[in-house]
Amino acid sequence: MNSKFTMIVRILLGILLVVFGSNKFLHFIPMETPTGTAGEFMNSLGATGYIFPIVGVLEVFIGLMLLLKKWVPFVIILLAPISINILLFHLFLDIPGVSVALLVAIFNGILIYKHWKLYRPLFS
Image 1 (tube, rainbow, N blue to C red):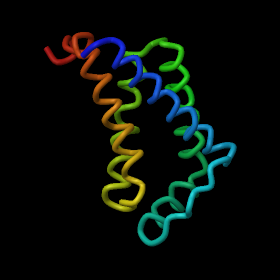
Image 2: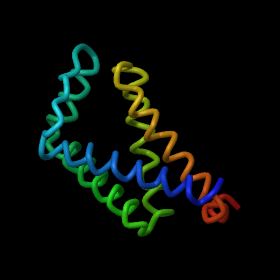
Image 3: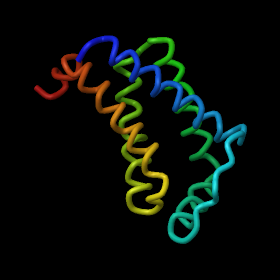
Image 4: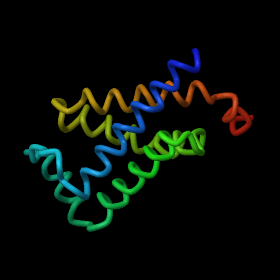
């Protein structure tokens, strides 16, 4: 994998995270309210009062670190459980939104693969 490709992936992922993370606070992208089971799940998460703000702050932080090329190996591992949960939510509860979730998970997987040599000692 060449560095130009991974740089593009890192920047695109950073932009996605900053935009969608900021939207959790500023609401500049109109989003349809999920219905059915997905709506119930989102309402219960929202009722906690802390999940969406924390996820939003983490997404913006991770996105900014990716754009600034700071702590990249750390932030892509920090993003892994978030991106998996986003993907699983859309696969099981809200399939129309799965494309962006899949893109985030794939980009995160590419960057983890690129930095795998740094994670190898964790598995020995």
